[in-house]
Image 1: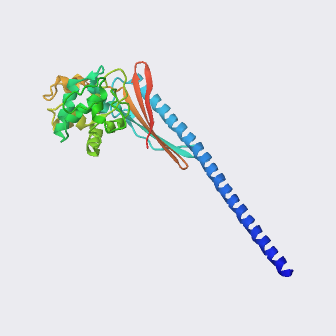
Image 2: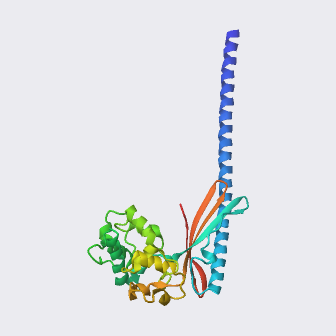
Length: 306
């Protein structure tokens, strides 16, 4: 009898211990889920803060650019909008930002003119490709990506038939983002993309030509526009900045030609605002493309930088 009772007590003890272990596991799992939920809520709150901080930095940039438009007829790298600033402490976090001139590079969408291929711009870019050791035929593939028709523009052209092994079609429209360039046949070469970054950009369509600002363009861009310009010529031109007019910048210069001069300006209408906000574990970097004209400043593009 005592043996039977002892066995029953043993079984009961095992059941109790099992229940205790199960309850403890449930409690641990519940505590972990609660911790994850709290962490998610905290991260979301920090993301909201970071988003608002970046928008505040953007608003400040718009204010600076608006004031600049009201007080200056030219844009150059000595102006307040072009200066860098340290991170600003803000509500248990930091926010920072800087403005880059979108007109200091050649806009690849300028390979089109009114939706059709621009022969002058194509020839210029093909020359630059060849001088830097890249296949100039790739420019034709890029033009086919941008133009409206579905007929290859030349031997290097690439319409839909050339993308048979891809999961997408040719856009037949101007690009809005730089990363779109990677989709174009032949532009998945990292070396080519790194080089292009030094001289080109992508500006979402504005309805007007995007010219290169002679007061902000780097040497490589100036020499791209003017094939006869030497390194010494470019350095001399840069040393003489800022210029109040394109005419004064190219006056008497043997390297200057009409095609390159027509692509120049002394003021900018496209600006890229880079922001970064850090709150706790959240670090949010964003890129805003702004267009400035007589009507004011409008946002062309907002994207998160991964």
